[in-house]
Length: 239
Image (cartoon, rainbow, N blue to C red; front, side, top):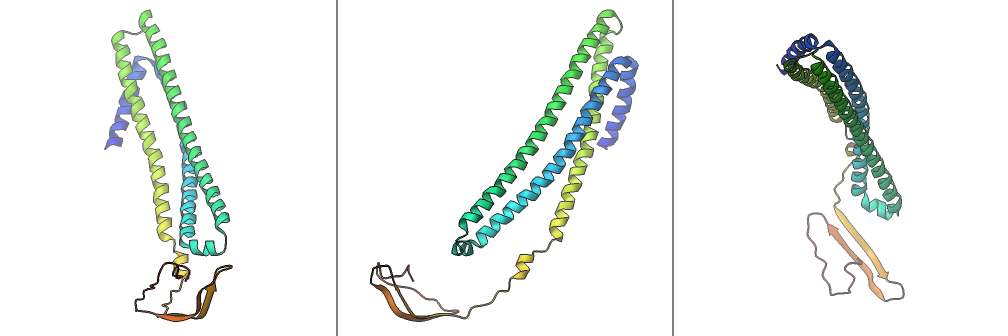
């Protein structure tokens, strides 16, 4: 319904403003066309950059998840430094993409603001000269101002509606892609229930010290609870 109202507003206002002043109307249409051109240009660039940012963000969080899930194996393999470097580099790429998106948004807003100010300045200069020279009455000047604002607002809303629809379609397709993906890592694991953990004749001593324990043997069976009890320094943490 709002789209129909905007289309009707555009048709009525464009006829009215051209009837009042063809010169001002042509200037307004040229400036509006330039504004929409740059808005369309930056909107496309922003869509591409946002898609790249989403992909890099997803990759970054997948890397963080893998590091958390395999932290023990990473420490055992002494690979903490290399994974930390990978994480920092990946985070830096996400930051760069975020800065690129912010820069494009800033350019789009700057161009829109500049063109709006140019339109206002030309409108005031030419309109006031027409009023002073008797080419247009003050009441018609005010009426033209009102209808031109209605026209610009309706065109901008329709333009933004089309751009937002494209963003929505990209987001919906991305959601469907995520749902269609299978978690290959989850399917690759085969979990086995361990029935028993046992050690036999285990001895340990720190460098230059006495044995913490000698010929230690015991077994842990599934389904039972065990407690390790001992005085301070008896080797509980070492075990």
